[in-house]
Amino acid sequence: MTDAQQGSHATDGTDGTAEEYLRLASADNFRDIAGGGYATADGGRLRTGVFYRSNDLRLTEDDHSRLGSLGLRAVIDLRSPAEVALHPDPDVPGAEALHFDAIGIPLERMSGLRRREDAVALMDDVYRTFVTEDRSRTAFGGVLRQLATGGPQLFHCSAGKDRTGWVSALLLHIAGVDDPTIESDYLLTNARSAASRARVEAEIAGHLGPDAVAVYEPTLVVTTEYLDAAWTAVDRHFGDRPSYLRDGLGLDDDLLGELRAMLRGTP
Image (cartoon, rainbow, N blue to C red; front, side, top):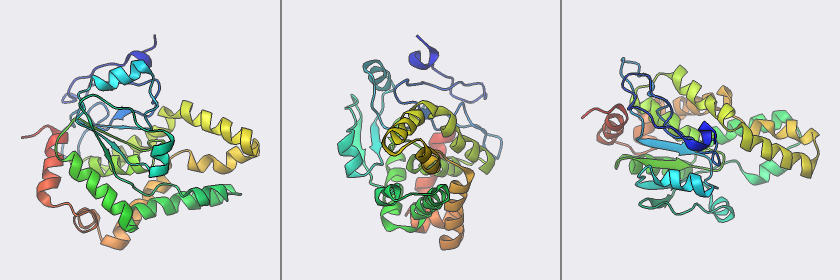
């Protein structure tokens, strides 16, 4: 059995030597949002074991048991009702199943893609929508309010890269992690989800032909351009990140302080 199948426990991240808490072979983009205890801009480190992120939870029996061993309080699903109906989450003992419908990649625009540059433009629009659309702001604000009730909790979407990646970026920013680290963590999806992405690429090639894989590839990965599109929309529509968190997502200073304290392990 490989390390990825067995999983590995970690320290609390205070010394920077922690390894990832758990790997799930059947959910390859499952990980602790704190990494191994990311450094904060003021010299602190994040705690592991508080919040987890993932792609969809089509789990083997062994991985289902491992997920259950984390003592999760909630599993938060960011997918659309259609996505949920296609692959419902399994019940996780002790964890409340919650749903916040954030806008993902519109299927009607996906089906009409003919050029790679159109796929890139689509993804830029998706990330701007995270910031500009009421439905997405309601969902993301709701997720962060739920997470502030205390860990451990897991949140996920389908690929665990866009909606999930944006929530993770916001949490790391709230915790005081600098932008280069946030970006590095965001890009980690491309390495971690290689196996599940290869399966999707094989499906695309089978249905639309091998040339279509290059057209759709920008929708299957994350790039700094996408994340930058969201941050730029934050500045353009709200002025700065604190205003976006307060006015866009409805998060007050007390709630942000609770999230920060949980992630940093401070009283």
